[in-house]
Length: 267
Length: 312
Image (cartoon, rainbow over all chains, first blue to last red; front, side, top):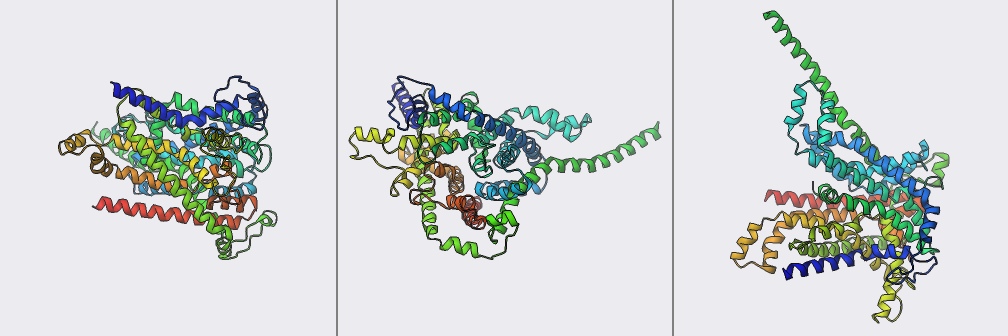
């Protein structure tokens, strides 16, 4: 018993060390404004001026990020789910080709995609646009969602859909009526990750926007960082606000997150 | 009655035939959107980058549309650039340093969490937080921690008399790369713990029980039971580690922007700068193609390795 308690204590200590930067972000966000970081270890006189400033200056960018992330989830899942089903249930020599293509896609650096999309977007007028960023962010959402959903759908017995087919339902109807509801958990996992990928995107925000109009919050933080930081509390308050989705997802959807980390990598 | 049945059967067969053709069309429709997306988001960029790397594709191209073919000139320009060998070395140090420590610390923590104790599941999932944060958020946070004059790290080290003067973590060419690698290790540990833990969990307890009878405990159990059974997971993890780490860009841009004095430039940051700061897309594309080529070499080694393992 003593031994197990000791393990828990050590575990808590490890966690404190690992999460210290997250705590420090929160602490620094509650300090008075200024270009130095004289904060003590505890925010004894917390002030919300950093948050006020962050919301004034970055509020719109947070909304932009939210819209882009939501759009990425919808588009990624709409494209990935039928494909994942096909890759798990249809018998075809193309299945292994598809899987190999997804594997290879993971090796393509984002900067390659940004290079090409920039020149294409420039021509078709998608630079500085929300749809343009949604499409670009699908490059992380779609392959991941296919892998996660497929690894779940492999466990579906074919008889499940066949039963509905006997009753006259077409392949697509059977997919919508039977496969989708059963796959709810893996859809949630894939959706959560697509959201996080898109919300965290910095590279496409940096390269595919050239002027002020559309600016995700990651880009807002980057511009704050500039060369010399003027108001650390506003920077850290924006960082905290940008970390909220990750924190909420981790607390609300713990089991899905670990499943996603493992499923996406191994399968 | 008899004729009626016969026609129905015949009719049904005809329907099934049509059904079949309609069905293979439906099957195609299941994958078509994804195929289009993968081609547009990966196939097109790869081809486009190959072409651009052979062209004089620059700012002028966007106005005149002209991108003359220049053969391999972009490659020779970037490779002979005095920054290239530095960027290669930094990329190698960044990748190897990050992965070695992420893996070693991740394995240590995964083994620790295999001990059954209260709250271990909860602690393990909270540990994932650094991995889920937007990279630019982590960069901003570490910038504040590593700040030379007022950052908490230097203030703490000074108070403990471990250093005499504040260390310019991100401002000195001699330590900046180490600081950047350190931050990247912090970001990657949770992922390594999670995957290695799941690998450990799949090793059957019976193996350890049997090993115990033969005197395999502690280090010997790790060496003769844990490690051989973990090899498959470990090799996937290391391959993914190389492929993901070699192309890291956000963290470096957020922490140092490649500086000071180019001390943290990697192939990825160089490629970004050539394309989006200097607007020399041809040279940027050449650099990113070199990056892809290196990634592929590692992946091929990995695939050959696993195939050999399967053959054995």
